[in-house]
Image: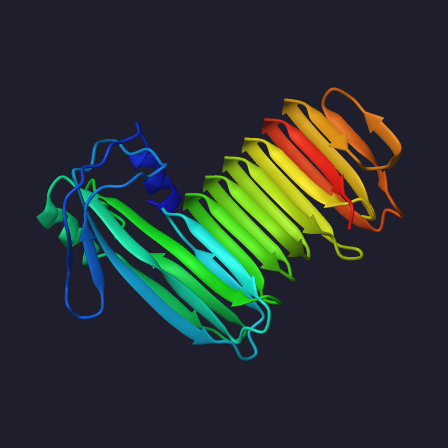
Length: 280
């Protein structure tokens, strides 16, 4: 069974969490037991949660991109000017109907950071058979600002900001927010919204799509691109953008921004699309 199929099997009604006390292992790794708010549905209520924090740093040499393969959790990726390493921090989290079973699950949950030839890859490692446990890995990642970012995620919100390179994002269930991006952007979401602010480089491409969710894009008024937007069930609006040869129907909007050097394509099946220009 594939990872995505496995996650779909455990999706169900939302759960509430119990709160217990915190404890530590005394070896620099912090454990907590207790509740919290998790935005994704599970088939039952988890009574006990166990957490373990982590941190790992990889120095960037000839690397050109970061690749992240995640399953359940919140993700934030931030570019830093002048940074010479990728810093991965966050927590591993397992919920179950007993503390002992949650702890056993935590022993089987991990992540990997691999230093490849031109890519630094980060991956969630968890059992294929969850045995009813709730496995969560939350990531906070900082990267050099000029590193490309490629993310594949199943359940959870994703934030990417301050990147001067391309971003490629594929999320099954969760909202995607990106800001202060200077580069190409390809974002695909099955269930969730996409909200972004970016500057399209010359001859660059922005391709955003959702199945169920809204698309909100903000770009400079000086952007040069062929713009196309399509909806099946929803509306399309634009504001503060001069669109030449505009053709607007109930389900589509096409036209040319500036010289039409780049490409902007926005598409949603069930949702609204809004594209707005800003000065700068």
